Image (cartoon, rainbow, N blue to C red; front, side, top):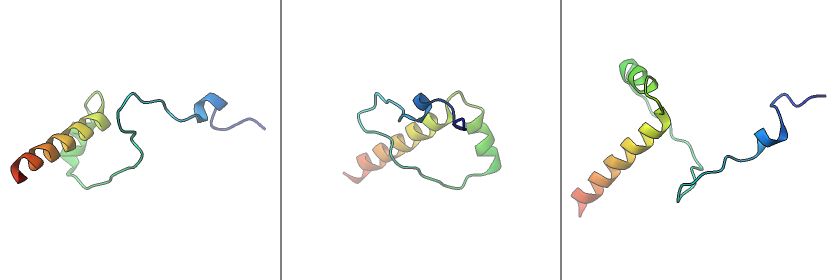
Length: 64
């Protein structure tokens, strides 16, 4: 019976060049307009990661 998910290479973990591996997910609610604007970008997941990291860095700077 053929593998419905493709070749064995497709089942290997994705290689990343990041310092910290992306091992977990995060879900949050947004407006429909925000969702459409983000989805229209070239790399929506990376945009969201960068936006969250920027906000965390700014918050860290204000807390110190």
